[in-house]
Image (tube, rainbow, N blue to C red):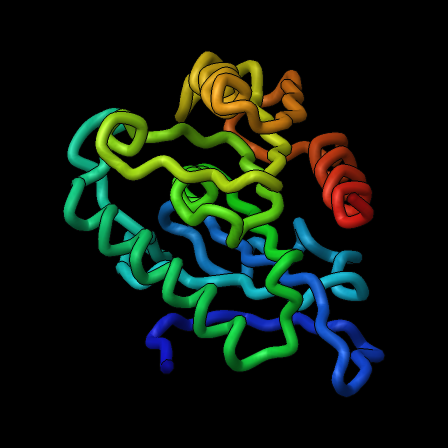
Length: 214
């Protein structure tokens, strides 16, 4: 299996031959790129193989994983294709790097959170944990995708209380959606807009390192 996705890889400095490591797949927001997400995962390299994935679509000065037809409404065919590409990349990385298949995590901001939650809801036991920062779950995903979150998924979901791009209420709905599926959810809100505060960063990094132990 090959991939046409562009990505930035960070790996444990003292990775041991023959040992498999947890993996963290990182997805950026619309118009951003794979480099802009690396500051959010700084310090996690010793615990994970980290893949920061560039969106395959050009969007302004940066990139995207899908396009938007309206407020909170992705173009369905473009979205489905983006999800398929990301799922295939996870398979590609699992084949080509020493990844523990029981320890695969996703982290995304905004559009990256949207695709992360969609992948988690549909890839079964392939995903162990998700950090979803300021995103939403498209309605057609809830209604038309085959929902299969597996039996060992957990999520950290956060949202800015003054988010001017994606309403705070959408973050609350994300937490409620996964909770109703029986998935453990840690939800945090912060008095910020559409951004990731230092407190948010510290909270999700602590959560993901703790979740590794379960």
